[in-house]
Image (cartoon, rainbow, N blue to C red; front, top):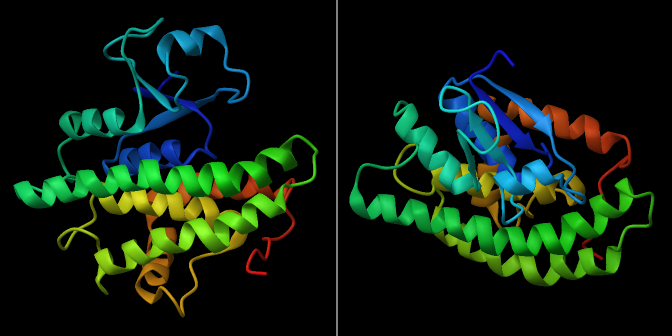
Length: 233
């Protein structure tokens, strides 16, 4: 391994996407090592006892076993901010800092539970296993569980470019990563209902920080998903 940082996990994880984006923003090179999500090896369970991906190794700190490793995307991003402060992804203002952390949690918990467990897994996981996707669960998620989440985000964005302040922050990165997760399979939020959120996702998809991850994910999904599903009906 020639890079200082090694990222263990799967590019299809929105949490790995989040860490990859922070690494890219800070100009930190990294190498990826795939971990089987459904059958995690013992060495990874030792690093990540809660079974969370991704895990990050800083080879300057340690190269074997648990030495130099961190798990949980929020912990990793906080570490990277201390390791490479510029450009900052956490606001300086105390209240804005708190808001950014809240919106990160909103994305990592509320959006991930709905979009990940309710849409991505019923479709993508099934397809990769050679099974028929569970479109009934996915439609229920798309039409019932995601709209209230999008309503809240539309109000928080309030027509602006960023969720907190006038610069890209961990709030934007976290929310974008979850929106990208459902967009890959079913498309973006309806621009007629959530115009600001739609514009936000479009801008984030074009941002260089997400290019590496979205390119890899696109190639992986293309093997099993010829086109996006229409879940509106």
